[in-house]
Image (tube, rainbow over all chains, first blue to last red; front, side, top):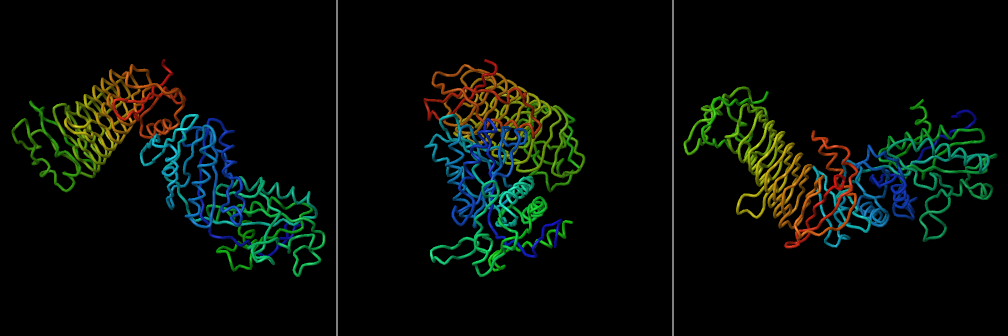
Length: 298
Length: 271
């Protein structure tokens, strides 16, 4: 399949079942809410090394936020609900509670319940106060600039991680521009995040390594510098740079929509191929076929 | 269709009408409802001696007339809705567990005493001891909501342990006296000795108030949890002047003769 001059490879993105949660952070100003959001989503690019994947979903205007202050919505993903609960505790405690003027709320209606505020409250050393408003329970933890307000319960739900597209371009500059415009378009889609820096990853990985201690290593088939020396390469003539965009989403639909939007936005002169990463279909629960995705939406 | 009860004879002495409760009427025909026993003073009477009964009970009871002398309406109710088109007498919603009572007029004293759940809304005023514990009880209201659009008198939320009381007008003396926990919001002025003997809990006022010397001032700040109450009250039809939205509050701790873990938040916007 070709769109303009770009070949769409007949392959699939292999995505995994993960667990996701949405965290709403509000603060006195948008800047402070964003500071906490950037902190909580730091060092959270891949579960392989960071134990979770996280990113900023969207900004929330004051009139639509839980406490009528400017907010930011963050999505956090892990491989199971228990692990996600631990990450929520650690990150809300260390990255949001510490940030001046912030408050932190659950952003998912239904799912497994994780007690977060109910554990963080002990930081209040007995001075914490519980408030129940309708069915919502909040904890007010005294801190040096006033109070940190946090939901007692956060919810997690089954989600999809590892949706991806690979952009194969003629050079680094062209590929970067294509990836940037894809990220810009994909970030308009709700319920997803792109966990890597600026939404883009260059160090795509394959399963396993020649070194026994490593569970993943560089995806040599897509490394232009190795194209003539590895057994199998995906780098054909004229391709000198490959970038990947990884998508985690609260639903499969959202991941597919983001991939579709991303593929279309990245098709530009100099982009030779669009592909997707997979492990032969043996690991992930979801296979998102590129051709089917494009045919279905066109 | 709702069950309609219309007061046709004004009781000369208080009428004890705790049978006017969805839990007690849900499986009865209208003739059985009219035959229910009430106490008129110390004499047994039938509900039909004072009320016309029409319509069909579908979870809602609408009561028409001046019920100022009718007590215990909705006491212990756990579901459904009671709408009183006029005033209501003592002990309305006593020990209520769920459901909703709306009083279009005003309420006498002891509104929602020892309430556990549900919501009582009074469009007019309410009397003394709103949401309180009975004399001798260590614990009063344990849950639910009482929303009074007008004024309340003394000892609102006495010994309250959980729940929410909101007063659109003024409150009398001893608001939140001996309070254990929960939240009381007073939009108007509060009388004397607010929070006397309170252990925990929050009393929030949009006016300044003279507090007991056993309360100590902590700071001025913007408690963001109050905005949740704003949003929630607006959702249930209770309007608060939006100018209060970003108020700065003085936080006072007390009562130091008890645990000293209670708080009184006073808006500084009208200082």
